[in-house]
Image 1 (cartoon, one colour):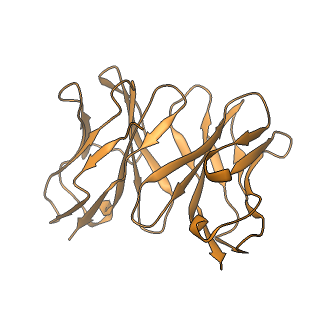
Image 2 (image 1 turned 60 degrees about the vertical axis):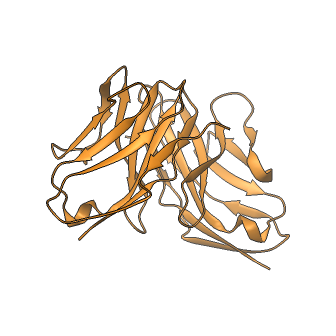
Length: 113
Length: 111
């Protein structure tokens, strides 16, 4: 069964510093990978996805993620964090052949001014 | 940009009561979903719906749950007899093939 691990509960980073949120996955076959962000009392907003092709995927708000098949990882990155990036970030995977997304537990990102 | 709309945003209900959560998916999307997020926990898949029938459901989606697309625009989740442990944020989503759009959620509180 497909699954996602987000090993850190909270990521603290100073404003202007690089931000990395880690994600590893487990699927049978090729994965479809997604990152979503959730602000307090809001829904899940799509950031980016990897389906096929270039391993480096660029998304919304300056975020990018790199698909690494050998390490089964899909870490989310931003070169220079903003205070407004403080939110809950979810990695999700979909296995080829079904429609359900499996989510990680989420990472709280706190950007310190 | 097209949105998935969910109503109500908050619902408080007594244990044992029936609730219906409503969603308006994006109009040209073909696949519809319900997910839930218990406070402080991860987002969990409940059910997917395609071509007017359930295409996949999780072990959470038992006989107390049902989904319906009563007309061309709405997609509903019904919980027949709510339990305290049904308290959660419920998200509706729709997709074409590989682009999922989520609504803002309905916070359900069972008292």
